[in-house]
Image 1 (cartoon, rainbow, N blue to C red):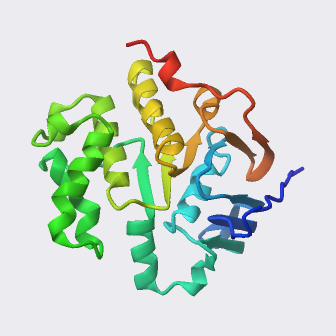
Image 2 (image 1 turned 180 degrees about the vertical axis):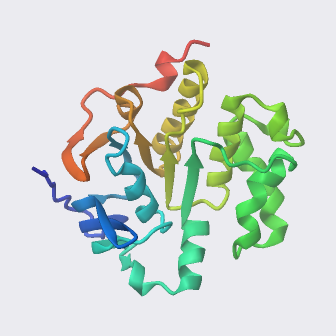
Length: 252
């Protein structure tokens, strides 16, 4: 049975993300495969939320819908108080590029481009002046501790450094929310801790909203709130009483 929690915004503002009765069904040769079965929750600006569940639970499908990479087949999704239907295709592309940042398990870096150019990529499709591109990209790389790697190519970096580049790329447009899909999945424990330390800092110090997708309890409990999904339903939605701190646990 799905548990839902109504999140009241005490500042009188709408939540950044509001999901009501969200459903998703895929069809193959006319045969339906339901994946999400009526999810309801909200995320406030500045929250760090982990969406956790086993493989096949529907968490990646949910991420794709929240990131405007896919559309629901039922229910309602509002981002910054507007539904998908209220955005034109051009507006959707703009929101996805400038208001949302994405970090993927596979890094998705262009191999023959320097790190600075990889981070600068989202700015090519933005309304931000080209005069600001290099400065923004350099600041983003500085935020993840890679200002000394600007001219390196991805093949010259470790897995942990590649993921830090991906984080810098997600930051370069100063988005409303950062979606991190299993960001430590391809990393050793030390590199994973370093990545989680950066995400914690982005949330606590820079006030970025972060939605983390993971199947690992250990990774999820770096967040302030964990939404557990099982078989396309919200199994629980809870606050984390004793959050893990990557900085404290990271052995230098």
